[in-house]
Image (cartoon, rainbow over all chains, first blue to last red; front, side, top):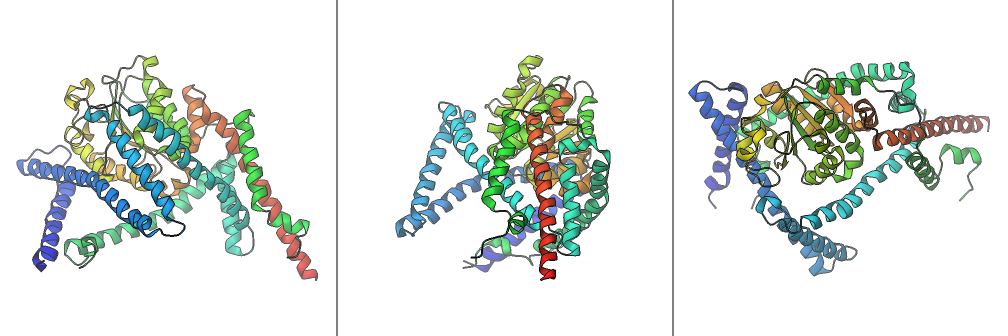
Amino acid sequence: MSIVYRRYLPILITFICGIIMIIQYFLVPPNPTEPYQTSLNKIGTDLTNWTNLIGAFTAGFGLVNILLLHGKHITRRTPGQWYFSVWLLIMMFLMVIIGIGGEPAIGINVTGFWYDWMQVYVFGACSGAMYASIAFYITSATIRSFRARTLQATALLVIGFLTLMSRTPALQVYPWIVDTADWINSFLVKSSFRGITIGAALGAILLGIRTLMGMETGYFGRRD
Amino acid sequence: MAKKSLIEWIESPPREVLYTLLLIILSIPLIKPLGLPIPVSARTIEFHHYIETLPDGAYVMVSLGYGVSSQPAFEPFVVATFHDLFKRNVKVVVETTGSDGPIVYKSAIAKANPDSYGKKYGEDYVFLGYVPGGETAMKALAEDIHAAVPADYYGTPIEQIPMLKNIHGATDFTLVICFTSAGDTAVGWIRQWVTSYNVPYLSCVLTMMMPTIEPYYPVQVKALVGADRGGEMEFLVGHPGPGLKKADSFSLSHMVLMAIIIVANIAYFSLKAQKKEV
């Protein structure tokens, strides 16, 4: 494939779309009045909706990718893995079939009950259990890490302990606990995270400029 | 392997013992609530007060950005907020940014029971379903709801929904409330609805996420609460539910955890002192 198609065309599309979105975000007011503002707003809205459509379309790519990856495991009988892959594919296709059948927006709401049932009583129960199990790991990790071994560890212990106290509903009857935790949040946490956020934003601006200039090409994917 | 002494055992208790202890102390209040004191925090009052002062006929966008995995954490707060909104003469537009959002919506709305407040679907509240695209979806909704979501979750064209006929985008909304377990979602509403359209924004996030959203409070985020405050919100709106039961669980488990931390530190220092003596 020619370098024009592989490299320059994607950079050009990225540049044009990026510039339009930047101009629309920063220069068009919420209620556009001038014709150029209305036009820019329309183009920006269309581009945004395209992005959403492409985003929805990538779910299909994800499905193909999972099929290829786990299909390989099954055909090669990867030890300790292939039977999980079989189960994953069975469940994936089952949910796709039930999901399409249960989509009211396309007017065939015949199996909506089963889709909801699978989501709530299979997926919901499993993912809820996975998420809840974190509480046990965190408890164990907290007990082991909250130890006044060094000065830094003591600082972690004190702040962590105060935060734990402030998040305990029954201990909120003591105003000093809430006040101290609020002070930590309002001054220490807020200022630290503002620094991190501003630093990340500056990095994102630079990355954006590099991408628009065609200097950042990671989004092209794998090179042939 | 040498057998651990009692102090060593206390200093580093086995995982199995901790997990069993935690399971027991978390379960007791859920089976039989203990009625421990639950003072309402200033943050929850602030959240409730913002809804309380909404003008008649205000449009509120409610975004459910969590899935079934974090449903137990969020649902008490979401249901209490729905009660708070349906009590008033406001229009509620609900959408989700997670693919399993419709499930959590159906569960929450069934518990809030809008019919009991005389609210009708399509006239007082509407569900747009899952809007894919993350932050671009928020931007699309802000610019033109009709273009971004041509039909609601049940397939009814937006033009045929009475409460949405004259609604165009973010400029028509008085408030946006987001419940999310994802940092990008919480900040995305700030970038696309608050910064661009100046729509007041309330956020309810997982408690562990609060430090990351804290920099935006109270300027961009008018009220910021952790999802663990569901019991307080239930109390404020006068609909006690699972959130209040969970508050007892939180209290008891946190206090036991704090006691273990203190005892383990005492054991650590006594072990250290013993080693010095030797």
